[in-house]
Length: 349
Image 1 (cartoon, rainbow, N blue to C red):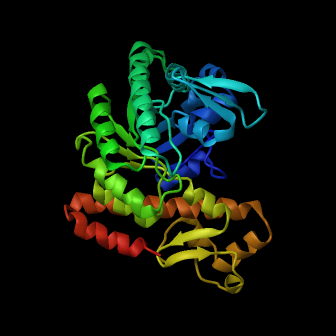
Image 2: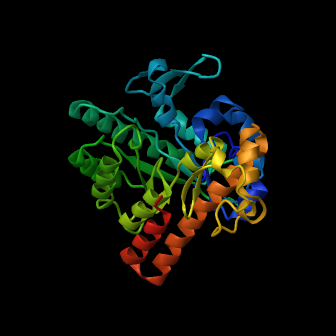
């Protein structure tokens, strides 16, 4: 899922995202809550109509953003008081108000409110956070069940329903992750996310946690790994049984001139590309690789031209989406881990 934090994938218009084959976008409740505001989005018919996007949208609960601002928030059983990064104003998120905001935004998949712990963290702190996340998950579900028909769909004659996913926490402790998964399943959700990763832990630890946790999640419901990763990592996680992933890496890296190709990573800012007339990736059929040379892309970046960020982002998104299409193709062929390992080898820099 490309990340569209403020109802926009940075630098890429929606028609291009459709051309790339994006099926679902991720939006951020925290940022949309602060600007333009949930009520404004609701008045404008919900996020789909507001951003002119007819395909699926997932919103996170805002919990990760709140907890990443560790100096500006205060946690209690009721919820979290935090200060806006925009103007310093004080706000409060509870499980109920986070779900209320997501219902008002009108995404197709919304997330339970959870607490994301720092890394490293003591086991006692991880357990206390996990217990609170479970209590908040129960409150999130109860509020959702009572208010899920309030979605501001633009077409009142067609009223699809939202899906609320639960989030598994537990730090880097395998036993806590197992317990969190089992108890979150007991609460009952149509899909489950693995949260609290990509917070500074070694990537091998991330893999161990994912592999150990996914074994306890239902195989017939979506399994969503939040906030990962590189192309080769997402192939590996799909091989472990993960269905959904999001990450800011393809768009953020693009803005810094780091591009993913079938031949490895390319830092387009390097002088060696100044006279390179070849395409960025000869094996890529995206609109950027079909039309522009490495030399031109390098020139745009060196000139601090906005178009450089746009074209770089389009290519990186295309590469990620092509990688996932290869994964789905492998699954459809029934070749399993063997074929996925081949895709992983091709994607690896």
